[in-house]
Length: 252
Image (cartoon, rainbow, N blue to C red):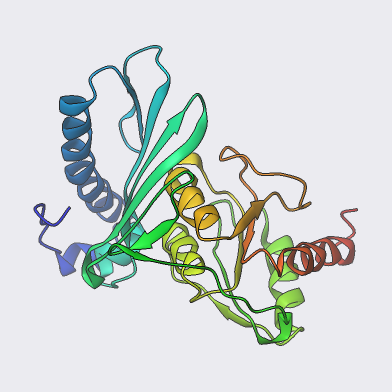
């Protein structure tokens, strides 16, 4: 990722043309994605790849799958906001087993292998030990289908704000999960996530002692779209807040 540079064109990034803006975002992601795909193919020709822009490629079968998100936080990247990252995750027989997340502007690399702990720049990381929801720093994001979910989103945000939590939005769900893994955040929730966001970051978070689940708190799968993540201690409280917001909206 450090070897690939794209000159940010402010005239396009700030253009009223949605088409020009979209093209610039896609160009950014494809440059990085193509280099990642080629590198993995060179070293692991028998593995499957799922890249965000190019889709599925590689072997039709096999036990290993790679999930690539070349730029998570693309809009931040285009606008020169430093909260963006590159995510590479590996699955074995359908389950995430390893992940690397690079945050180039901050010169930070998060990585983990199942059963081996989580690290940032080769130093071990661990989730926070905070148990009081009122003192937490919680992250969230806005799904692409936000117009259809605006009522639920407002209800969720209101539920957390009313408890006194500090609420943050970085613009990158992958980065949020890595910051949660090292204790910068204490919890997060987000709707509309996808496997490219979750494959690598879920391994990093769980190896750092964190927990992920659906909005009911019953389990986790990287194909779940609505995800709750926490330091583990706070998980029941976070899930209960989300459930209470659903009741307010009359959804239960």
